[in-house]
Length: 407
Image (cartoon, rainbow, N blue to C red):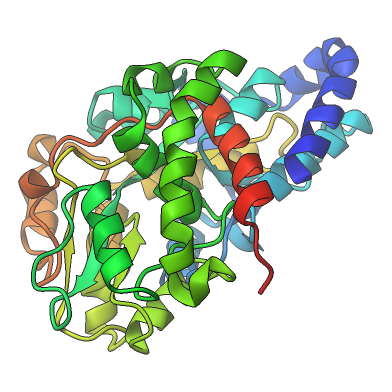
């Protein structure tokens, strides 16, 4: 419903787009003049709209805010979201109302269909990210140049890397499933011991995409926008798979955990023995915090698992653009990236090319203990690319119609 409303509002605002040029030029900090950006940022308050469903991530965001405040005099307020589309809809509403300056959002943790929608409708400030001082440390490649197949073109800055892994309890499952077919067979032999977060939670949606990659006849079509005929042919095997899986899920598929934290609680309580994660270090981090038993390990499917980068973007009408740039630049720093990769903090893998860093900064990463449940980077393999955003929108709607459940 939110995305449908977003689409209608986005269409309504297109007529107003031509009126915004003068306002945009009046408030346009240049990241090429970094000293000027730092000066303009002092005293600004950055309202960072970011998913707030995970305590360790919230703690990291609070730490980053404290660092930016102490070093650059920039205040950071974490506006906790349950769905990023809510923030996008707010920017759309402000633009429709003619609020082209003084917007309520300065930075958004964003990717996928939300980035595509904002870019398509001219709701982003920039390009700016590739001119940031710390961008020179970012690893090159499609992972940071494309966001769900959509070119980034400097309109958002990467700050984390993720890849699907499956957490499994070796006390119950000595050998993990290595394919989607293996997972279905195991779930049918062990009913009630597996589930995934309720779609459209990003992790639940990612499970659907992961299965889709394995069961669809031609995965190469997924990098292109979905058309009607292609969508039906590509997704028919997915629905057949889920029709077979749903009855043997936790609570027979009549309910789903809300997010990764709720899913982890089910695993800690012994209600399920296997769960999907988009953070290769989540299991280790949870074991360190006594949130999971130390018999939990992680695995990937032999055909590969989906991976992507997380980004932050500045809305076109942000009030504190300079402060948002300072925060985004700090998030790309070797110090912030190494702190984030620490399993005792968050465990999110870095988007930096560590080999290019100074010796002191390489040592920050070399000194990290990835933990007993984290696969080595080479064991994760090359990540599968995210499908074009149009696939996810359709799949989420169809999933809700077929399997949507209330808690």
